[in-house]
Length: 79
Image (cartoon, rainbow, N blue to C red; front, top):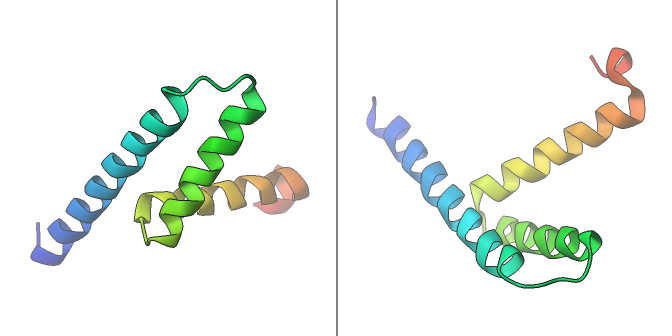
């Protein structure tokens, strides 16, 4: 593994750990009343982390965008 590849890997691993820890603490350990409340808290944590350049949060938002495009256009049209 090259130095830059290992640095990228460590960055992704660190950001993924940070994001999962924040989601666990801020969403799962709290007691929201409903599923939309969980969804909104999760969304807010991911958005906040993406603004601070967390690569894992940014990647999740990109996947979410692609999933919504697939839903909107339909699978045959999207591919």
